[in-house]
Length: 327
Image (tube, rainbow, N blue to C red; front, top):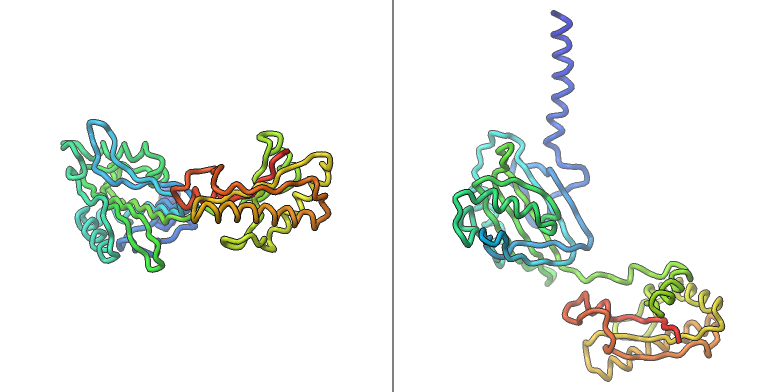
């Protein structure tokens, strides 16, 4: 009898820390500085991306088409899933919804969608929760795959918020009751649009250059940096220039064009001139490293051969480049 009692106590002692740990924030997580969590909630799931794509819901859910209008945004992304720590926590969904609605208004939010329950549907539904919950779980860009099983009580808030630095951030918050355990759940997605720094990926070796030439007859010279709107090569480009020079020295019998490209910002004349000046700057830098000038020819074609549409900052960044093209 005593042995059984001791065993029971031992099991209880092991299980209590486990239960307590279950209510701690997941490792590596943190609240977003823009909006605080509701008291009594902990971070169950967390994901942060320096640059990725995510989506927010900007229109009501159409039950007949099983879809809703969404807005996809690229940039810095933080996704957080909160749950309350106590199953009998006395907080209603509307209480959570109104608190976050008020918080967003204080941040001068421009709302795309602010709805609760049936009001989130174009077509009214008597069993609306599972419909929208299942749709969420099938949309990998919304919350980056954080699943939830909302019951009948839920609310959605999605908005654009201006920041003090002149930028903006997109937010989507869903509050609700998770079906399996009846806990209150908060799903949050914060997306801060940014221009992708494509210069982070540079040429690593002469083999990279050869692979590009073999595949398409050209290679983008990533890792060469210029002052803004100028043809002055920055000192941090030296490593990439040395790799290019090494490749050219090993292929002295082959000739190449150094071709400069720009986006479409500014006048055509300016872009043609700038693209040629940047190509000349790269050619001269390589000649100064011992490459025969007769092996290279500099050309500037401005915005005439874009890699991407010039409709966004990201697209324009991809179009500003210098290429080595086999002659």
